[in-house]
Image (cartoon, rainbow, N blue to C red; front, side, top):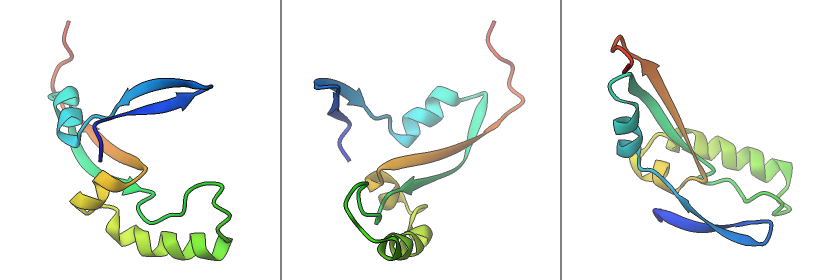
Length: 92
């Protein structure tokens, strides 16, 4: 839910900025319109956590209907965004 975080890249802190859904929409407009978005990793155990396949499968099953809810999109590890191309002309 933070806008920017320091990510460890080979021992160096790299500040990474996360765009909001509205910033993504603005960046792609008018050439694309937002069709769908969902959060991934909302309930899933973290990688290399040692969670069994059964726990991962159950977590995924519970998470699936929650992924598209606005609050859940913000707390997932990843955001899947689907845009559809419009008929707007490209600049230049």
